[in-house]
Image (cartoon, rainbow, N blue to C red; front, side, top):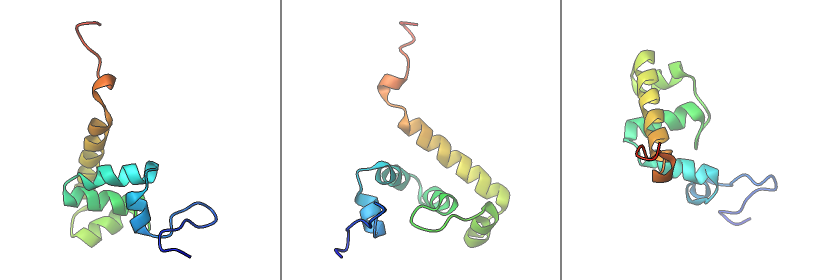
Length: 97
């Protein structure tokens, strides 16, 4: 089987394929890669991107952070992703409202 071939169920064979994939997973990873490294690492760990999902406590222990810090960093990272996902056409023109 080729290195970057998909399995029968359509899931990627390698993380390389996931990162280059034009599908939703690839777009999510591309946006996460634009975040500061700690925020990106926490989101990947929490949501199981390129790894198994971890609890907040597991992520905190792995990064030498408190659970509260992990929650704060995760919330900030998700806010950044939401903000970036809004394109210019999604923001209303207040002059026309």
